[in-house]
Length: 528
Image 1 (cartoon, rainbow, N blue to C red):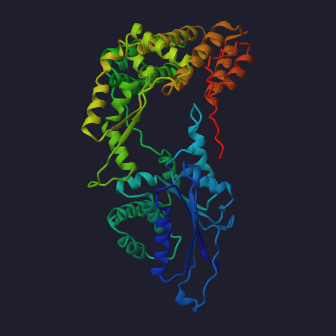
Image 2 (image 1 turned 120 degrees about the vertical axis):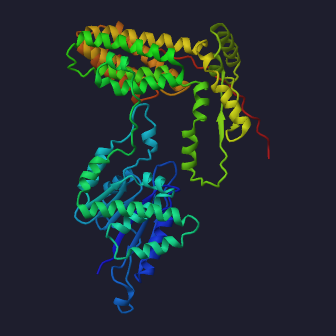
Image 3 (image 1 turned 60 degrees about the vertical axis):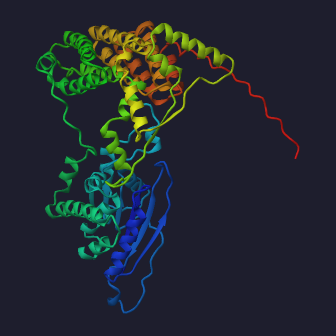
């Protein structure tokens, strides 16, 4: 008789080692032999710690004192169950050949913790969750995919307790529920929360197995995060735009209003109306679903609500942020939480809030410093956001919203936004696809500091070269060139791919930026 084999994969801080210990204790309580081994992973979400367990299906009393022989590592294709706290990690084990479509039960979380490789691209570097789910379905005899992280948050516990409940309800191991509950009862001060998480997961998996409707459950719950309904649009605004745009428009309007004021949100609507009028004139029947207006509503709102020191301060003070931090560090009701925020505002941040003539003077002063070989000026700050002083200082910064409209940064951003919108309106009026590709270039504007500046420079260069100066035989070829250049800019933050795409279509590459050369004296070596 072969042992029951189980591989548990958990990320750092999720209690994978505790889960493995619990499972061994359950087997011991039930009178079964068990063995557990682990392989440590690495930090920064480039891997996970794996725990391999084997359980003998018969109790010790039934095998006449003989001792089963267990393996130390999983054998490809010989796993009875795979349990993972993260969706991509589960599929990674599948690609390693550890599971078998006729044998392996898979329990995985639909939640995602992005890998380092997924965070690096300037565009959307996430692996498609539907593709990952399809891979799990194709390589498992039975699969249960549920949002383990959401269940853990609901119960106020860690993911390991939720995974424990899912394993207990799966029918994989020949142990009674009371054995699992007895182990949880001895788990320390978090026993009550662990029991809640156990019960939630147990109920979910048991219900799915009992009703035989897990496929529908996966399809209905494929999204890892519940998306809140967009705020309602005012009646006059809703009447001015087609229904297919309303959801994106409502989110964009709320973001811009929260960022500045009602006048600023009115400017957002005026700008979007220009795009809508141009698209409606070109496509009166709405055969393209007013996709250009919808994308303009998205990227215009993000650009108009650009990040500056005022916005950063206001975001730090939000109640949602404190709730998220407490949840991430698993702080209890009676725990004292201290949060220190680190800032390093430089000339760029301060000049952005100053009138243009003062901003230029400050920038010239910093430029002279850099010409002398000195680093750009900055003011490192560490604020205890949990303290009265830190909170008051952040509130003071957040209250400078009125100063934003008078600053150089606001003027610069509005001028560039108008330049982009003019191109969108003009090209949409002549060719729908060309205008659509230009509006999608709004994706290039993102981030903060040098990332934001690089995105703006790339967008303006694409507009100048591909949308205006470079001749093309047709509007379709111009649109294709813009799409390829945009994709290249998002794929490579160094700009090599973008320069290659530009020159391939006969456009000028980006100008080489001046970078000061600093000569550093080699330290004198002393004789020992």
